Image (tube, rainbow, N blue to C red; front, top):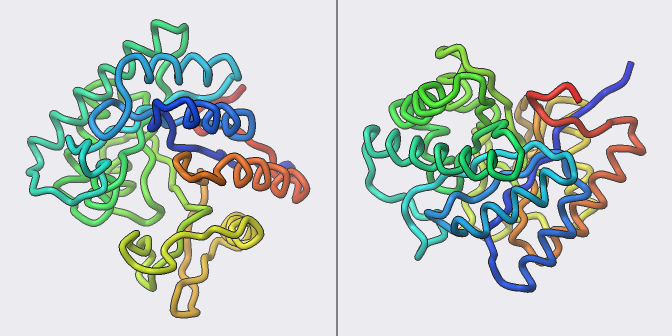
Length: 256
């Protein structure tokens, strides 16, 4: 029996020449691209250029909305209420869909970024706000959320298709949450360790935690981050490792 997994990357977050080269080197090795929507990184030009590059490679194009926090790259947990989260998310999805359409692509999914992602993972009111924004714009969009999170639960209760996400380059806490970036050892820099973690999550449905234990996960899409210098090498190695294990890449929400 053939197996498949979605390999996604957060992208469109660096408009420098070096960043453009790095992101271009990642795209051939993933199946989905989550494009920053301008509030934590990127702008209309970067969004459109990134979407066009992804579409030309046949990748699924998704929106990567965030809190309005360019200074903190969207990774600071700011005081926001559900209404603000709903409006910010809806606004960014709309802009993303319009730009995707302009390059002949159709928006496939939505994956919150940074602090918004983590807050919606544990706060049901914020999870509901994100899920309602997705549904109210286009109920056919797939909502990406941390495996086992409130966001995935909220999507299911609204009848949305969701994708339970796991991370190749992040370490996990005992409760299944991601280790905060502010803590030492939060990121995995070794490609072999990242590949082993991904295979464990796909094949066995578990991830090892920092305290030496294991927690169950549902792996429907695997994330790597595009802002790391080694991201192209990570993406290529993961894609090759998955292929060797008999796992093909296929975007969630698409049958082609």
